Image 1 (tube, one colour):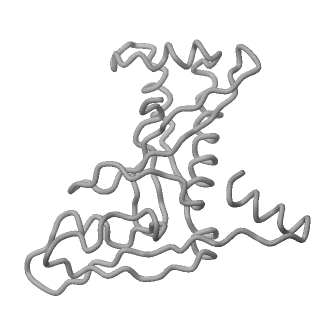
Image 2 (image 1 turned 180 degrees about the vertical axis):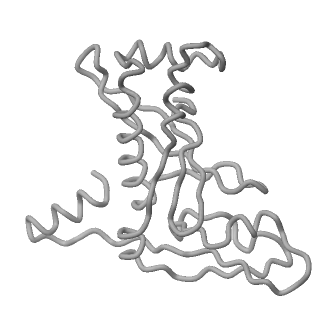
Length: 185
């Protein structure tokens, strides 16, 4: 059960609520003429305290970690994905990308007509897991911090579900953006 479901259940059944995760906002302080590209990309990004990039990031790092209330995370975090990540990227009618992901989703019963539903479902699940701290840190470089989030969708061809990793990029102020809808099992 995810954190939001546990909170709801505790309220309904009048039981002890789960412990709230601690969150931080990464703050890059401008204290010299030299700036680390990576620290600049992390500026204003939100992370669960237990699941953040290495801090300090480097020997002369001027960054600080500012505490962030969990209420702010719950109320202001967002997840977005471009429709184009599903149509035409995932469902690739012109076979431009040649990644084979379309065949997988079609084997699960999905077609290009499901793109909008998939987009909305990915955003919903990713946001729930992000605010619960259920993500894995990925590559961190001058382009930013990547995270992996597990998505589970029902198969349309039989009574079962399929679970896989999706790739996201962390942006300032609690925003995560879909990089790839399918990043592996």
